[in-house]
Image 1 (spheres, one colour):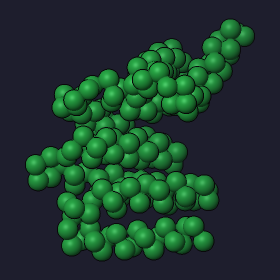
Image 2 (cartoon, rainbow, N blue to C red; image 1 turned 60 degrees about the vertical axis):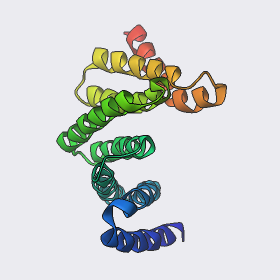
Image 3 (cartoon, one colour; image 1 turned 45 degrees about the horizontal axis):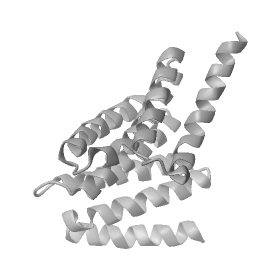
Image 4 (cartoon, helix red, strand yellow; image 1 turned 135 degrees about the horizontal axis):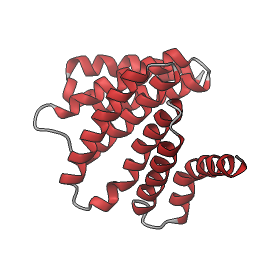
Length: 187
């Protein structure tokens, strides 16, 4: 039932988006990213990747007409990270790399315009998490460890030391880093 309801909402938001692309872009992109996650949970990975890719393309419309707000740019980056991860899951490595590079560019612009650049550090950690996955796929263990460490530091710096935020953001990267280091020690 959840997938069907979300799909109907995506259809409704697509119609709004066609009428006013700039005004409807972010709402549609956010709903598409949610739909993509639901598809992935249903193990429909190809459809999930397609929804993420559409979400990222739609979200780019916030770059039109005077540029995005800090919130819009942050959402564009978040959606880009999700799209890159989904693309990697279905073997679209080159496309995922291009999306990560675009999110890096948008991140640099976000930092340059942010009132408090510390607040945007955590999102850089998510971008680096995708880069670490690419290193793993290419067998670059040292690169993967370096990027994961940088990712953890970025997320810590952007968390304002809230234990709940730190726990939710760092649990998976730290577990993965622990596994890598344990494997290296066992060799």
